[in-house]
Amino acid sequence: EFGLSGSKPLVVFIGRLVGEKGADMLSEAIASCLDTYKGKLNFLILGSGDPKTEKELKDLPVKYKKQYGVYIGYDEMLSHRIYAGADFLIMPSRVEPCGLNQLYAMRYGTIPVVHKTGGLKDTVIDLKEAGGYGLSFDDLSIQSIITVIGRACEVYEDPEKMSLIRKKLMSLDFSWDKSAEEYINLYKSLSND
Image (cartoon, rainbow, N blue to C red; front, side, top):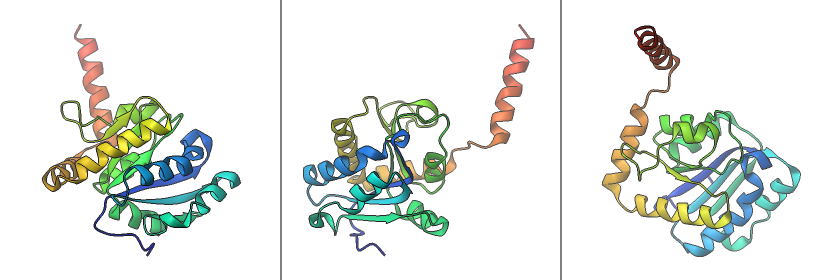
């Protein structure tokens, strides 16, 4: 649909193209990643928002055409196809009180790549940690994004690891039933003290 290679990892951003979501960094970050990891990955953007950011993303150099796609606007059905076909979801948010996109992505087996802030740091455990299933970065900078995308490429090169992570992601339970059960257990433990 976007003319991207299916044999390379696909990193996607789905969301509002606004500063709070880190979208103002995407154009430079994508160009830097594609230059750094020449021919090793693809990027796809779905979203709308700040006109300046939209223009920057539409105007990325032609040399990235086979590695980069963008859809300005929002299409619910397309977003589901993108989540399902993606390998990684990048969320360079400056602020994210909760965050839902990483949860949607994980249901599809798409590995979240997130800036450690707000709800993102609460819902995504880095692969470096015991039981981890995502990738994260502390410093919100172009260099940090390049580095974490490099880690994503390394993970992608291990099909067995990718498969295990995807299975784990799809089995995670972030439902209200689970949250309610945890609150009940917490209240019970407090009342026993």
